[in-house]
Image (cartoon, rainbow, N blue to C red; front, side, top):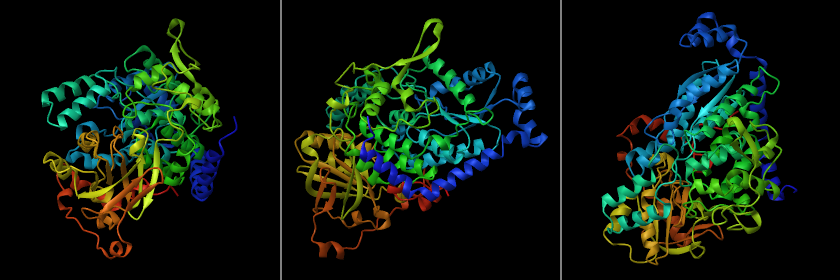
Length: 608
């Protein structure tokens, strides 16, 4: 199948606008390779420090300096269910490397916060900034210059993007991402959503809510809904940075351990010490970035990646624009319905055919670049396959199913759930925003109603509790942008807004903040730029102004007389309370330096 012309045009546009920065980025990678393995040039004292803690076999191999040494960057902690399985990975990786005559060391650890724990709380204001903090911590880990390739152990929301940003800054080093997999299915997502909504209405007790939450999040592994964590796994696979079919295999299983062993084997094969050097900066090019955007649209993935993919592209010397997302959304069909875009979880998605089926469908429709570099080799064609254990527990890959095994969850292109993708760009006199429409009912794609304006989500919740929302409404929550308070997710509002929508009211949200990857059924114009704290137009809104949010025509507009609108002075909120407490004072430098949401909300510029 010929490449879709829109896909080709978007890729070409990214390449053309990024030509100068991408060339400089690739030149820097070439210079780093020409210098050869850095470990051999360390002083004796430097090198001795680098292997002092190793066992005798590893120590001798590092002294000799002729075999690859793998750096492990781990986001392990045992509070995050998704990251708890990583506790045993370093020893698995070291053993796999030793068995192949090489060595591996933990280069460093990075922080990993759980948005599920901080949702609706002060700690959420550090969440987005944790991505760039993780990138910085990864940079410190790799700065020892001891490693020929790196294995990245991370799953959740900001961790994978942060690790990848750093991997691209160290773009001369091969990078292999090693997933841990989802927990087994627990309470269904529909049951959880029902109890949450009943609790928001005062019809369920805290004990009932805690019971269903505990049955949903109940074991080691990733949460099973399709939020940012599982969107990360899809992206790493479709961008060729993880092994085929490895994203959604359960933790602590024989197949998962075999895939981890195979990841080590691939990392060793890609170093500059051999003939198949494949650095991270060569894997992530404009084609891989476009493949990632296509995967996001085709699966109804997390809105957070409208920030993360832009920041990732910048780290590779590429400029990805929101218009690129929007153009691709028009030609990429929605092939998956996984909660919150449907009732299934990621385990059901995997069982229905998973990534192998999805990638095969998109390749056959000309909606993916197949001629990309991947850690598995052989371009993206290899990613049609699914892993399994054959005789003697030998890892093997065989073609994934040609037919979806559950068409309520995963469909072929010709029977897609929607003809277009799940994420769209909005613009108007309020600025630019994005909206996820994959799970919004068709009759809610356009909302026009009076605004109720708030400066924080707690005030919205209090107004809901007082019964103030009795008519159609556009709820505006401003001063939630990156410079105001770190751009927290406002997922806490989802149950209340869902209740209003369930009562028959026409409801939308407009905010310069974020929504969780687990949100979606209420139309929400999010990531509004410019943000209120920078004098953005959202700061001019008043209670009662009619606001129009239209995903069909790409509008986010205040329907106010133009002369009156232009004469209004933006309201400046008192943000003093956002500046301290739970470590927020330490992140003042981030709030001062962070870029706008449409450029990735990052402290890093395009790599020069």
